[in-house]
Amino acid sequence: MKLLLDQNLSRHLVAALEVPFPGSRHVATLGLERASDDVVWELAAKEGYVIVTKDSDFYQRSMVHGFPPKVVWLTVGNCRSAVVLQLLLTSAEDLRAFAQDNDQSLMVVGPLG
Image 1 (cartoon, helix red, strand yellow):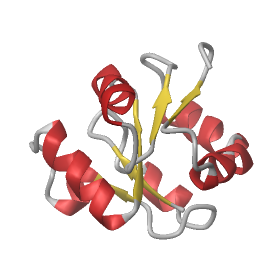
Image 2 (cartoon, helix red, strand yellow):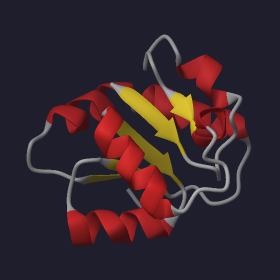
Image 3 (cartoon, one colour):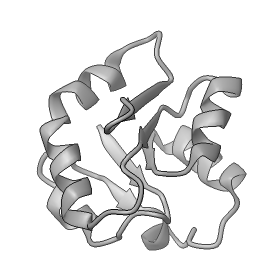
Image 4 (spheres, one colour):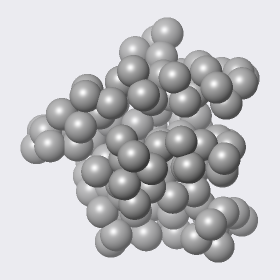
């Protein structure tokens, strides 16, 4: 399972996520730091990424368009990257199950999930 971290998340998270989620990337490392949501969405769908974001725009897009790609919406608000990392690592098993689920397009992770 490859994660694609949205611009609103630290690009430094990718290194810490490489073992549990090999092939994960940040939009900036793919040259998409200023890309529209449409471009990010299309690339994620084409390349098999699960988008991880704090942005409700991807949540809404997921509700309208379904998947691929799948979206993990982090509902933690402004917080340190260490909090996001811990949340993703402790949710790793659930994230993998979500990626394999043929019925779900969105997973909410955090206090509202």
